[in-house]
Length: 607
Ligand SMILES: Nc1ncnc2c1ncn2[C@@H]1O[C@H](COP(=O)(O)OP(=O)(O)OP(=O)(O)O)[C@@H](O)[C@H]1O
Image (cartoon, rainbow, N blue to C red; front, side):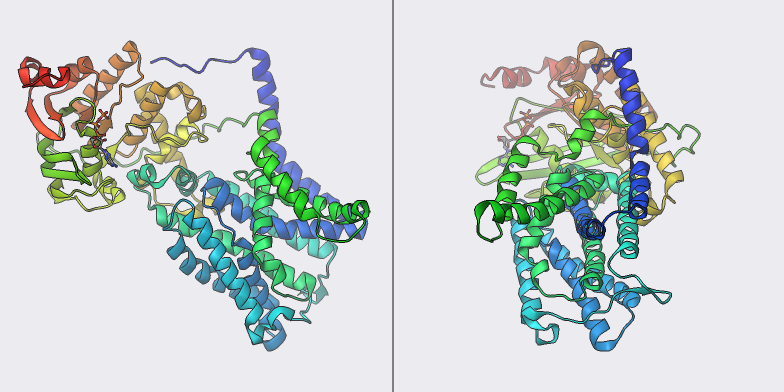
């Protein structure tokens, strides 16, 4: 099959290679700079500024994961900083508990709070989620300000500084070392997490849950998981903050700060881990400078920097929606992934059903949308080693039937059985686990991920390793197996050459092929293809037909919704024709072609 993404000229390639190298070693250069900075004779003021930047970078890293990558906007990050800060303040001042122990206790309390809040609010979508985060951010703020034991709005004073082996960590260079150790550890952990099986699942969340669930991903679990992780990063910042400031009160943990953290994330480049540090740095330095300059210019004191930040935020959203990091992205090409999986073990394959076994049994299934009967008591079967076409004019109800079979929609009546098990009413991810995989009429890819990563999403259920293994890099053997499988399926549909390309750069036909590769990576027994040939050229359609025949020969069952009649007639063993939601007829391609009823349905004449 063809490759629409053209090869670049040699000069551009050389430039890209240079950029890629810079990109690969960039993080290590940053580590070197951070280690060297406190060794330089910098004024103490700058060390303290850098400490603040590190303190801000931690909650912002959480927002990168939550808001930038997964698309879950939270205004409540500052409240979790508050939980970490107040936990250590209260326990160390009132009970004399060791601060190192209160770090763990704070993480525990934050984790449980985030789990409860997340499990309730993350089910919401659209504007409701940010509104809910504002609601609980305000609740926690007023809780801190009204509880006597927490000192109300005066807060808790007299918190001791941190010590290690009897050494005072203080507020300067040693503290700098501690803060930035946390920031760098968190940054590298997140980079690793995002480049893993769990990370791909998280990156798929921003595009809605339908596709991710169809790949077997428990989207709510992943959302709650990253919400808890983001809250814990905020909690660590709070713990450090309390022992840095030696006092806590509610004001740094209110809604205003929650908005400021979001601003830092957007400024840096909300979807980029290293952008969190850039955003925290730029906003902190700018804030300090404006706080000095603006009152001098205006002649009276006041928080004028807030006005400037408001204007800046609008400008950034309008002209630089990907934040400052987009400059790095544009200038330095991302290094292509090192191909190290060719000798990885093959993933175990599902035992294929016996040829002729009934895989899908749709019995009088019905779907109504208000007064419209979109699917009216449709029945048909699909067997192993058989390609069944589901055809009909526009609006006949084919995609709705697909969505009923795959659990995207709940049937209003009837039953769907898959390999002898009733599946109507099951969520998509449970159906996927049973061995059914699908593509979508309106392509659902993660455009910022590479072609390879998108295909690997399909193999999600064939892996086991979770986020902790990813952060510790103990998932690499399995990761190589998943990527090997992803590449194998890409080769199968003719996209092997393009595996390092961003999926969003592919032509529409290629995106459809990528969806097929992703579905195949799940190792399904039944494959459901919704208009796979739309946008393909003649040669690509022929190649697609070849792939489908190959899959049938392997024993897979295929249900195909398609408008391209020559492809349908060419590959299908059996065809079900729908019209206005009803079952018009079914039979072999020859029988369907001969049918007056079918001809009339397509031509729109009476029959
Ligand atoms: N979520 C929905 N709410 C209301 N009506 C819907 C919904 N989804 C589909 N429909 C309606 O149900 C009918 C069947 O639509 P469906 O998309 O299943 O048809 P189709 O055969 O796949 O058509 P096409 O070939 O154009 O994709 C149409 O009249 C459509 O407008």
